[in-house]
Length: 65
Image 1: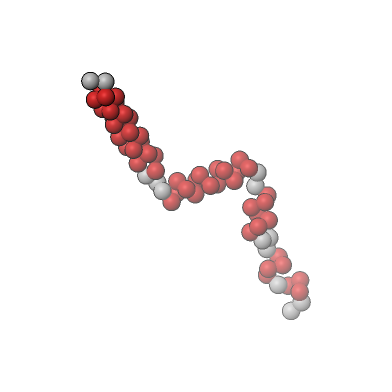
Image 2: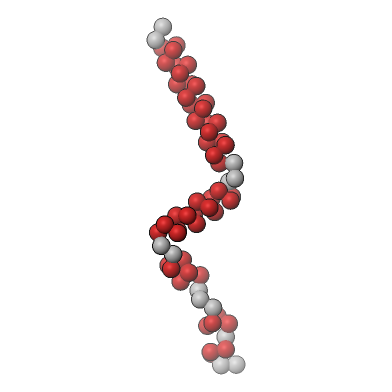
């Protein structure tokens, strides 16, 4: 078996594949991976934002009295 028959010589490395992507593609890959791992992110974010807005309204009304 010669050096040219080895499998690792035929396949491109994963590092080369990452370098081939543009910055937009890297960002898209990051967000799609993030949303695949955390599918309810926007639900929790929306609930948290609603709680903060309601708390700010309550705080504003109580502090004005």
